[in-house]
Length: 609
Image 1 (tube, rainbow, N blue to C red):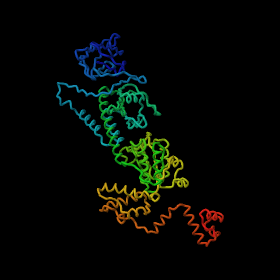
Image 2: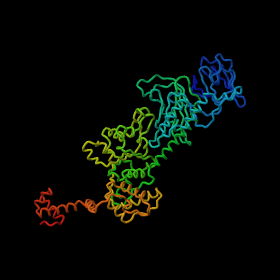
Image 3: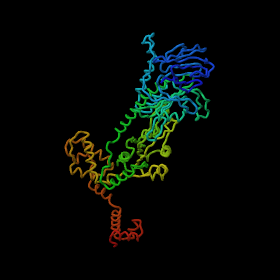
């Protein structure tokens, strides 16, 4: 069904259906009445001629214009612009547009579509002349848009938005993406003069996204409500289009510009087509990022061991994983604190999202904030492009803060604010970024002691330690040493394509008696070293290349692991022997009252004489 859509003038926002003959003019009897002194009473007519419509000027005083050219008669083609007086109309033979009004302003809404852009051929001109410099420049800009220079999503979107603003000569523009975790549209990148806020109707944004509709608007726009010195209302032309990827809306694009150079239906059609390319690029970038993050994560995360402390730890992980509670993992170096954090992540509802770790000791203090929160382009010398921080990259997943006890006091308030507010600013940024992450921290320090000495904030400690896990040292789970060693042996033998069947009994005995001050990490390194250097099917003690330890040292290690009561009993017996049974002297040496010593002797069954 053919229509004329009025986009400027006294009938702006109206749509007129064309019949066999449609008259246009100032007279009330005209089918399309244009109340304008610049328009003649019977100004023009549109007549159907088989499969086309012909526009004829009826001898008007000020003339009829099509695409900026004055005409007496013209066969109308799709998207032709007809100007009569102050009225500007768009002809479309079959495109189904609907009228809508938001805040009293006319808005044109179109359904998503796939169609080619028509080029009007002039048989009197050479075909080669159609490929002018402007067309070549447009094709080049579109190719840059389709094949962006970066797979990093913020950099990709910034590059795309800049290209779009050049293609459409936009003064202001933004891209919003749907956040499936926060369940809302989030502004991602924007362009505007002096980085001012862009004020847009929330209804237009929501309808573009949820109704999958494209908007074209030209008219008066009020000043920006977020600015102290709001400018007066100005004439602007704007467009918005949904980002559609396989019929799923992932976001929207918005563009606008001031002054008389308004957007038309051709611009809107081109924006809708370009929006599909943008959506595909965004989807591909997200998929690649997800693949790369998954590739860095361990494929199987399991806590290996049969010791009671390990069994208890596994049970605690299963109970806590389903909740988003903050977890603090305590343990010596090499006990597998990050593995515990991974196990929490993989057993939670966040397992399909990233696990991102940052070592608070490895990053210099002056770079930690930009590493955690990211930075904007130009935020400091060397910030050539926007960069996301680990907090933003972990959105939806788990953020692991390793060695949190070594975080400087100057940075602790910034981390605390992030944990409380769940949002942050990139370095050099002015827009808060909201994320949904689970925070897991780990340390080999005594945080309670650091809180007492003032080296660690008490409020931050309690924010991090809602649940506390303890990673047991290897010396407290010696029954797991053989199990762990054989597990590591299989991993490294398969990786290095070596046929190694296992350890000799003597090698197992050495492994189980060794002190392992470096815990599981030291054991893992010892097995890897043996697999590299050994060319035999069985690993022998000397092939483990462990530092020799004397039998007395092994005995002392074993003695150090006895129960406290047994150690106390042995110490009292030794002191009494030195004092030749004199309980008064023995009590003084032990630093206890004589009656307490007598009670201890009775408790442990030691002779009182």
